[in-house]
Image (tube, rainbow, N blue to C red; front, side, top):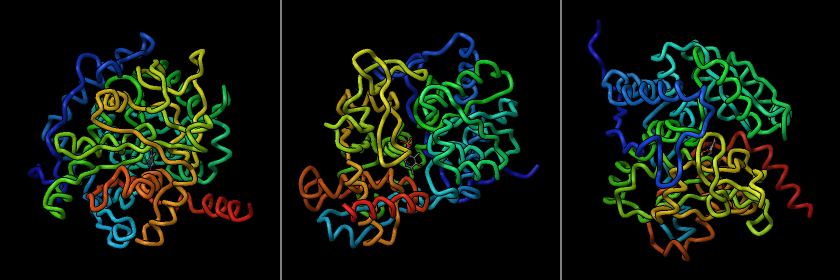
Length: 412
Ligand SMILES: *Cc1c(COP(=O)(O)O)cnc(C)c1O
């Protein structure tokens, strides 16, 4: 046996706080699932708690993050953007990871756990396909069977990602029920899991779903915030005034915030404002959501007066989930974090500005955070403030869509 090795430059910080009994974050979270899933969730909770404090597991995970995912990712100081905005901007570069977004941090952790639980089959749901591709990647690496549920409408819209998943060895199952989009894919994945829990792990892609997922996914993503805190300190000589990230389900934001909750930094989660909050076509689940229980957890969801879940709208497929992770709902309730939004138009402006001034083409999701900063620099964010913004992914996947939208804008 060879001696255990260090994770090649990746150092995991100490585990973060566990939610209270049954995964509660204040009045949110919990475990709202059919009885048949409870044993699987209890097994997962136990296994994760054990793994997360096990030196062997942490070593193995740190090594994967270093050798496969390409961590640690740098923090980049944006000189030209800072000059343009009048505030000092640093970016945490999750766009530079293998597969091009923070999602890889979570799926590698869950694939390792799947192996530890002796399971050989992984199911996942995906909207735009990004989490499906990440899961299929981790399953290829570990030799696990991978089944991805995807709304039939999304299968049509995201043909390239469907092909990617198939190339990686995954089976993509089109879901035709309901609106044939993400929330229906989640329902079908949950249905599959009820029938297959003995052999199957359900790999959830954000800080959503029943306990222990919101806690576990936050812990797998906290590497983003832990690294960023140390890197920002060495650049600024202290903590930033603002820590900003975009919020879909909320995993890149929660991982980022986890590194800064005990600092004085103001935490800002930027939601999808879509066509404008007042139009009703948006994905602003924290600011416009209503408490309710869906997909296994009590949190904030976009609902009508009868409690029917509404469709979210965003230019960015990764932000149009009509809910948000329970820990964000709790952070909003306590006032520790704020959740403003940026519209489609503002995100498009952020996409172009960062590309032009820094040579970094952002994914449309974090382009919302850039768009928000463009609006608020000199306002909510006073002149000369320091800002650490998480660049959750790269924009190659969005380039065609943006080119079409800009042509449309020009033609109007
Ligand atoms: C999926 C995705 C998001 C949204 O998911 P969160 O769980 O809110 O982080 C944001 N940015 C990128 C690049 C993504 O791929």
